[in-house]
Length: 293
Ligand code: R5P
Image 1 (cartoon, rainbow, N blue to C red):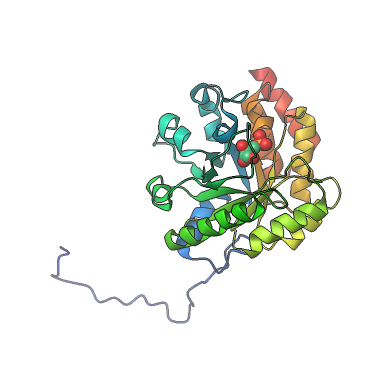
Image 2: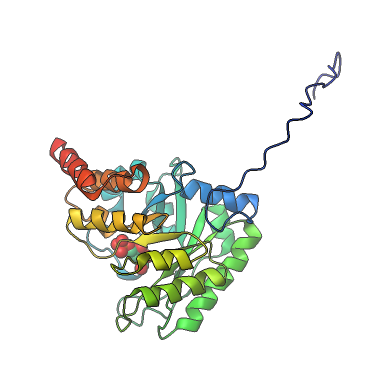
């Protein structure tokens, strides 16, 4: 108990200096509660306003995809260079050391495999387990135009409702079925639906034409999905164009962990996202780091 003897009278009230009330740095997030904002500020760097998410959740429907056969060996060396890890609770509990202080975005939908209709997902994690795992956001796949469109949207709104009770944001991941055209019109529709229904940020693919209209029409941050493995310069160029178009970061998997030099690639992506590097500068960095290895 505090010593009550010789208690000094408080006198430094700084009358005339109003307490600051600053706006939260992230688009569309100013009216969220403290816990939500704090978690988002652990995903998005408050300095740059952006994030480099490392996606390694592929196993939840694909099994041990190339580069993720041994997450302990291939991914742990990358962790220091990512802002956030996007992964399943199985990999988190079995492979990632709890001493890791990076933010975690937990894969929270599932229930199908590559052998079946992918849009037939459900919520696959209890909100209490998300709190127990101290995650900073929950990721849910949303299949606009897909066979189980409605079910996937309801999965998202259920997670948003549960997350709101606990202060845990929801990342909506726009999943494109084989039959869907990947253009700006489609992604404007998909991302806007997710944001209108309460998603705190949205992951979507880059499109060459009109990506900036997707970002402009979405009232919450957009992070660019990586997609299939590209040559490193092409992947860096895509990330650069997405950032120029208004993306608040990237969520990349295969283009990093399937690179011939994953740490170098992750550092090069960071340079684009956080340090305004051009594709040529970032590729130069990639090659220098790769050769050092
Ligand atoms: C599903 O679509 C997932 O979110 C992926 O497993 C993952 O995030 C994709 O990452 P990338 O396409 O960059 O390999």
